[in-house]
Amino acid sequence: MESLQWPLPVEWIAPFWLGLQILLILSAAFILQRLIARCLKRLGERYPLPPELLMPLRGGLRWLIMGSALIFVLERLGVSATVLWTALSGFVAVAAVAFFAMWSVLSNLLCAVLIFTVGPFRIGDVVELVETIDKPGVKGRVVAINLLFTTLIELPEAGGALVQVPNSQFFQKSVRRWRGAEVLPMVGESKTPGN
Image (tube, rainbow, N blue to C red):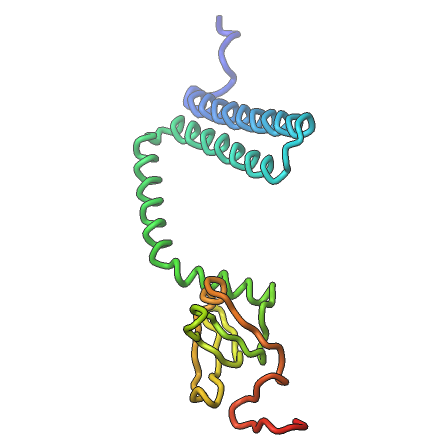
């Protein structure tokens, strides 16, 4: 009977079994994730499903499987699922409140990236935000674009003041644009023939 004993000290047997269980959970999750990815690939080849549908589905299922495996591992380590759920829901609630509070700033940052990459207008262009057909909006020459605002200088007949327009406004309203310096003069320039 002594030949069936483990060559490990007695205090190592419990951590060894725990490590083996964790390894089996992670291996099963990895194999399941690969199996589902292969099934989705075959499904996409057999039926004309767009890759734009399959890629997010595959990614979502991967996160779901690996997240579930992580919860099983933490349960094996003694962490209660109730405690995990409470912590996760508290974190999500705080993140939602913070996201809601920061929405306008994040919206302006994203719109700044779009202005820089898509280029609906450039520095030196004259732009006008159209409120309605009969109500004129803000109109001026673009003098600066930063991550939150686009700075316009009003035309001389409108007073020539600097106006900072949030970047998100350029994607929420209609915009009229005139390219370059040949359309309207800057403040202090004279509009004479031949200039």
